[in-house]
Image (tube, rainbow, N blue to C red; front, side, top):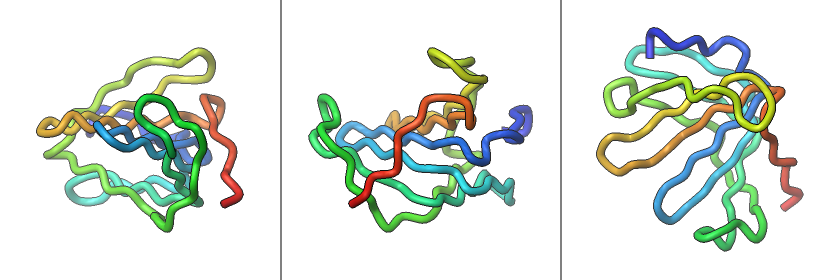
Length: 113
């Protein structure tokens, strides 16, 4: 992770996808700490109806995500349909994917419930 630049992702969003769940949240702050990256959130929501596609989103109580440097493989996957570059972290053992979106990238509006 040392070669990736995390500056500029505060105010952006995070997406976490597993085989059975999809989460999206708003990034308040990113902090490099020993062993990885701590992502503090202003809110996080879980997709309902996923897979295959989210039908709605429900807020969760989760306030942070830790991305372990040893467990995840990191890469810059470039911009999406619009916005600046995104960062992708893949969990080697399960295939879980975490994507950091910049503030000018893809966004999910904060769910009300």
